[in-house]
Image 1 (cartoon, helix red, strand yellow):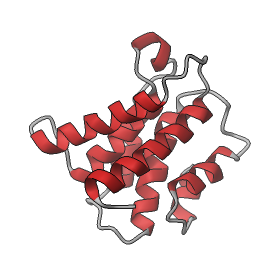
Image 2: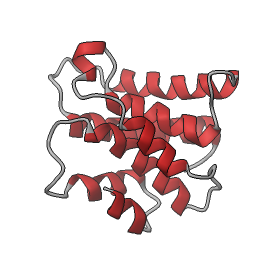
Image 3: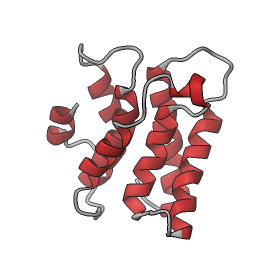
Length: 146
């Protein structure tokens, strides 16, 4: 994943996601997807020339790597949706004390999660694709980027 994120020139998060997902080391299901989502989003934004906070990609990957597998069924929040919120949190510089930015990050998670409500069993690749689509929509509407 880090190799793709470091070398791709794409400004399309969905394209970057697919570049990572097609690698044979990426399983169908697993917590890797929780980091792939914000990684693809942050990379696309970086490649588009948008100024990001220092270390944005590393921050996003480090945060997302802490979301365990099975989060969706065991805790009621898909890790790919959490990855969407992580991306927005990093982009906006959200902290627990920044009201607007914190709300934006949580809203991105909520939107991604709401787009995933399909009564299907888990599919991390499907959830990752939906999280990317939802976050692109959110970023365009609320932050005017991507």
